[in-house]
Image (spheres, one colour):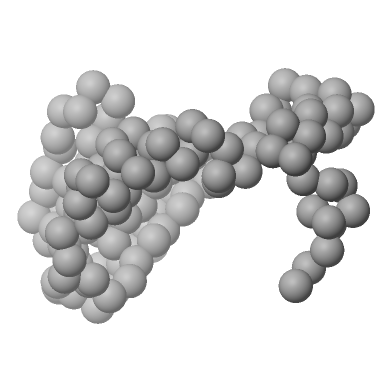
Length: 148
């Protein structure tokens, strides 16, 4: 599992209000922006702060997150079955081989993934940018809005 804290801070595997965490709480390692690791064994709390990510082992059945900050905490928790395949990453691209990563980077660079969103543009400027993008690739606006 992966726990990402966007705002605030959380303790993973902490005890609070008399409710103990599961004995098999996952071992956690959190990495801050300098990539230094803070590790703790199951049952010991690991504090994960704003913009930090904790990677959890597959042991255990329970995950307890406790707010460690005043106010609102925004936390993203991702988990799933292991895919048991090789992973290669470069920037935001994650594929199964270096060749696939290089192909994905080429596809992204040529616009095959669509138009990257620019949060600094107002609605009118964004609409114009989308129109220019479609024209660049010879796509008619009417055809691009149809769902097949």
